[in-house]
Length: 286
Image (cartoon, rainbow, N blue to C red):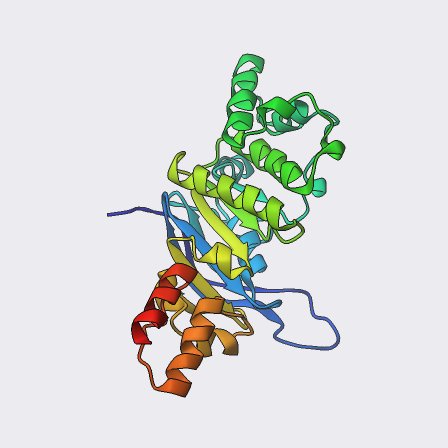
């Protein structure tokens, strides 16, 4: 049985009051488990609480109530020392939406080395980690390049390499493909899949792209700060009305089959999100 690497128990968080509003909870009583080695996509409309949840998991912000466990340790325990919290937090890395906000050096390999250097890793080990991380993201030939000369997708892969070099058990991608063109998004998603399937790193992907979410082991949909749906992709995407009510789009194949079922009385299962299978099912009906 898989072990939960991350566990949230009845976690709530409220941003400072604004515009005179009270009870401005971004996350309300959220309980969630993420197993070691799992790839979980978290979806939600703007303001649904998905990015706030990501920041809570990494303790960038602290919950107002509830508990957060990482690798079995309660990182919200007030009795923990700062060093204890730091050691636990090292197990969860984070890649943000804009890679320029994470790149701090003028040479790619120096940027990837920045995190391990801050952890006090010996120079020889840092060299090995940098080389390994750049190889994993397929950026080793750019090691001596200046980051500002790279494409958006390449910059994001450098940011990912910097996170990998710190050897976390889990990496959270907070809308890390949102600013990229389709080619850049594909580059980053291929890297994410490789990290999960080949390196065994637990992945939490915050996204609003359906074609990214369908690649996950599990999809969590948030609505108004709460978990609205939590299941395998084909079961989540077979409920288009619920996704629409959460302000989300659905895969085009699901939307097409839903309309055909309604207008023609067909009963094709909706948990289909690849075009080839969708075309085959329609052909069979015709």
